[in-house]
Length: 313
Length: 321
Image (cartoon, rainbow over all chains, first blue to last red; front, side, top):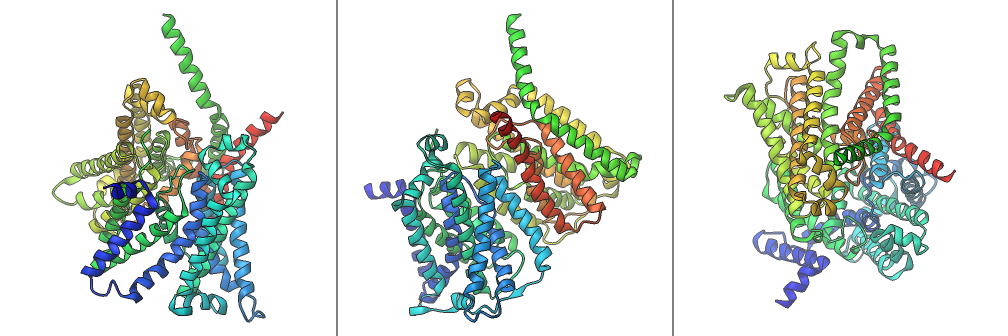
């Protein structure tokens, strides 16, 4: 009884328990679900959401929200093949350029929030709208195929039988967890999220941290974009759209308060896996697109009712 | 006597504060409308005016729906799907045994019901509105897709003519809805929306049923969004399960342009209406000047940011002096 209660009081653990429960039940009832290959595939899909949600977790912890994640993923996935220089056989220069662009977009978001005092939700929404228009003008609306060897390697290779995407996700996870829980800057983010005024009076620079935070969010969205491109081999307008809502949902499912100041990336990780598992189960049921959409929304809602509730006032 | 005069003074002070930021907006809107009338004199004829207000009307409705949500301290990401659902229900029911009256009732009831359910989840189960409406947008989209997988359905011609013909019915309807909003604001429940959004704890201690107020606000918001869908269906003569998608973003943009704040209790309906008018004029002007639709996205992004940033910067500049 005590164990049950402590699980319910610890959202990351609760989400992890849900994932394990769903995986065990689904493996016992559905043939092929519990295969090592299938579970590995689910994790590979979750890694994109997880990496995009890494930036989102940081932003939400600081009391903001980033609605431009999907647009930045699309920008990276479309621009990377176009700007990869032909003289570079490894393709790393192209990746670096694309990540710099993604980080700069994030920096612009931060600048808007910090200097122009535009609320983050509006700034990032406007940025997403702006990028959407710009992309169609730049790329002309057609899909671009990637030939950058480093990107393809990232999307297809399996060192020690583990997809490179999952390894990348593991690296990002460790980095973010250390950043939030073991570094002064993480403490500053949490302090700003909990009470911006108190944080500022204690000598925490709002401007600098906001700029840094949104740049990081842009960078992580960019990394997710590179990974998506590697897995799909093609970039097109709209490729990043699904990741906007799922990144926010993963953060909230992981027990991070949307109001800021409370939460951890350790909850977002099982949150992302849970989302992908849900989508996979819905696909198994073989329903029409309408019913699939209803089930997805309904499941997110019911999962939120279990794990995402704000405390009573 | 003294009580009345002091409450009168308080009312004036609050209205004055709410109006302060709007003066500039009224000027900008007026300038844009005049510019539009000079560029396209056709708007001054009866038919031109009717067509112009018909393009504006659904945007005004969703701006009101979004402003209502923002006044309670939330935000809705399900406005677009609700517009689609309203259009789909109108197009599937009006040809059947329910007829036009039944169809309108079905649309209105659906909007009220979905809004109320969302409100109950947000207010009583204490989930953030942005997440609930996010999940809700999937469910509503799904329902619309099941009811009408492909664009189609049927709207009687006379209804399309009446709502979206050559008479400015839409403008009159908008005036009517604004009057009803004014009457609603005069009731304790309507006043409670501002109070509950601005300071929920204070409102609760003053005896306002905060939860019930929120549920009502959500229900009315859902109703407005679905009615916008009904109008869009009448305009196009058929239903389309994804026709409402752009309205989510545009409703937020219009409300923000109109000076409605995100934290609840800040802003006015007249501001939101002006914001939607401004947005509608700008979209029309860009369309007629031959901008490609994608350039509209770019311009819209810039406009939204500057709409919020410019007043803030002016404020900061004044404070520094």
